[in-house]
Length: 227
Length: 351
Image 1 (tube, one colour):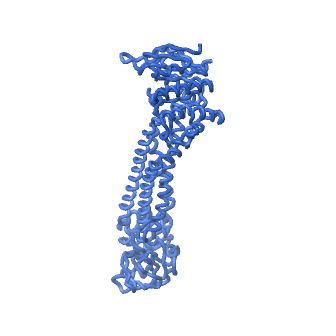
Image 2 (spheres, each protein chain N blue to C red):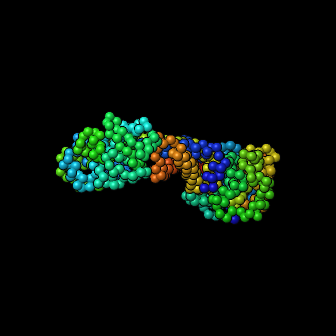
Image 3 (tube, chains in turn yellow, orange):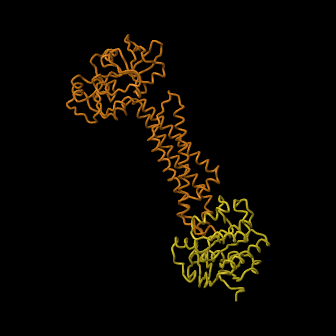
C-alpha cells in the first residue's frame, strides 16, 4: 500500500493575469521503505509540493491520499493532528527549539503526542544517527550536520508513517550531504518509512530509490530502482 | 507548561528583566496605595474607629465639623435617638517637657457610644474634665502617660490618662476630652459641632437648622481628602495601564522573535492551543513571581519605614491589586497570542 499518494494534484495561486500554476496535475506515490527524491530548480514548485504533501496547504484540484484515505478536505485541526501523528518534517532552518536540549526536543514530542517510538528502538535510532552523546547539548552547541541529524531523530521519534525533508542538505558540504542522504536511505529501509526529500541538489540522486523531477509545476519520474 | 518553564530557565536574564519590571511597577503600586491608605487613615481614622455611619451638621456648615454649630433642640433630638455629640477644634498642645504638637481636640460625652467604644491601648479612659485620652502617635513626639498638657492660648491643662490607637483626624493626632472641657477651651459654652450615629439612617426628623449626612460624604469633604485620594488613584490607575502596555510590548517582542519556532512546531503538528497555553502560563508565571516579590518588598518596606511616614498596607487591598496586576499581565499577553494563532506554518517553511 502506498503511504502517500497525490492524484492529479494542481495548485493555482492568484487569478486573471497574475494567475500562477505552481503544481500542474501532479501524480506521485511514495511507499514505505522507499527514499524518494524530488529535484528541481528554484521556483519549480518543490516547496508547494512539500506543503501540500505535508498537509500545510490544500490543493486547488486533485486528491492527496494517506494509506488510501483523502485528507484534502479536512479542517485545520484535523490536518494538524495528521501532521503530528503521520508526518515527520525535517526542515532546512529553525529545525530545533533553541531553548531545549537535544533530550528535551524528544521530551517535547512526548508532551504533545502519545505512542512515540519505544525507548529501545529509539536507542537504536540515536546510535544510527550518532547523536547519543549530544543529548545534553543545546542546538547552538551543535554543528550544522549534528543539528540536522537531531532533527531527523526527532522526526523519527514521533514514529510517523512518512518523513518529508525540505532541502535537508542545504547547509552541508558534499560529503555531509551524501552522508545524510545515505542515512535517510538506511532509515527508510530499516524502519520501513517512506522518506521524501525535496532538494535542488542533484548529487543526492544516486542514493535515492526513486527520483522525481519537477519543472514549472510538472512532475515526472526520472528514476525508479524499485521496479 | 513544559515549553514555558524550559524557556524561562534557559533565557534567565531575559525573563528576569521582565519579572523585575513587573515587580518594580507592582511595588510602586503597592507603596503608592499604602501611602494613599496611610494618608486616608491620618485623615479619618478616628471616624472609622467610632463606627459612625451618619452625622448631623449645621446645614450651612458645608460638611465642615469645626464650622458647624448644631442648635440645642436639634442636639437633643439627635442624642435622643442614639447620637453622640462632638465638639471639635484644631489647636496646639504642649507638655511640661516642652513637646509641642498640632492636634485635633474632640470633646465627647461619657454616656454616649464614642466614649463607650473608645479602645485604650495604655492607661485608662478619661473620667474627668482635666483628663485626656490621646492618639498613640503622640508617643513618637515624646508625650507620655501622666504628662500634663496645656492647650495653647489658654491656661487649661489636662493629664494624659490613656493612649488610643488610630486616633487621627485631618492628618493630626486626636486628643479626646470631655464636652464640657472642650467647650471651656473654645470659650463657647453649650456649642456642639455635630452629632454622629452608628445607624446609617438615623430616625431623626424635624431638625431646625441641621441635616443628616452620610459619613462618607463628610469624610470626602475633609480638607484635601478628595484631591489627595483622587491623585493617588489616578497614579495607581496610570501605573496599571503602564503595566498593561509594558507587558504587552515585552511579550509581543518575545513572541515575534519566536514565531519561526512556533511556525515549525505548528508544521510538525503541535496544536496552536498547546502553544497558546504555554505562552499564557509563561505570562502568568512571571506576573505571579514579579508580584510575589513586590508583596515581600512592600511588607519589608512598611516595616522599616519610620513611623512618621503614613503608610498603611491592607492585606485585602494588596491581594486584590496583586490579582488585578496578574490579570493585566494575562490581558497583555493576548495580543502576542493573536500572532501565534495567526502564524501560518506554511509561510515558515518557505511557502
